[in-house]
Amino acid sequence: MGGRGRPGSWKDRVVFVYEDDDIIVVEKPEGLAVIAPEGSRSLSLYDIVTLRIRRDNPKGRAAVVHRLDRDSSGVMVFAKHAAAKKALMDTWNELVFERRYQALVEGSFARSEGVFDTWLAENRAGQVYTVPDGSPGAQEAVTRWKLVQAGARYSLVE
Image 1 (tube, rainbow, N blue to C red):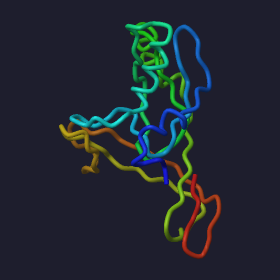
Image 2 (cartoon, helix red, strand yellow):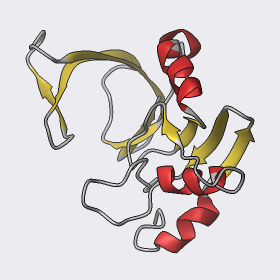
Image 3 (tube, rainbow, N blue to C red):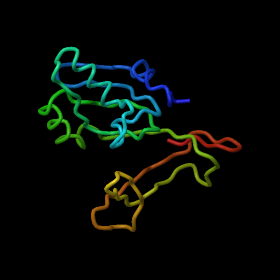
């Protein structure tokens, strides 16, 4: 159920994995936005991490280094101050050399592995959509996938 509609329970579902003077690492549950959509009053992961930081530093706030989609769960890193955010973001591609996701999808695959190669753009509302290859302002998104397990109606892919 993901906890949607029960915002008070989000604080209890976020697991703080690691914390030092510079960063906080958390497990983000599925269904919780990293940042609340503009105009929304819903609690976000950013809000929860900022509350944690403010226990020791009343003026402190979380700095978002990377994101996960609302419907994804996983480990996330937040910086506790601007210098840590800059250091992480400047070296992010060297620090994070592999990202793995698992998804349960409807249907089956003809092959046991493959590559999705698409180009993505983002509009002013923050919505991401596919565009023709090489479109101005777009970024290439390459996803290598492999079949983990196949069932009659669903497949687990990584």
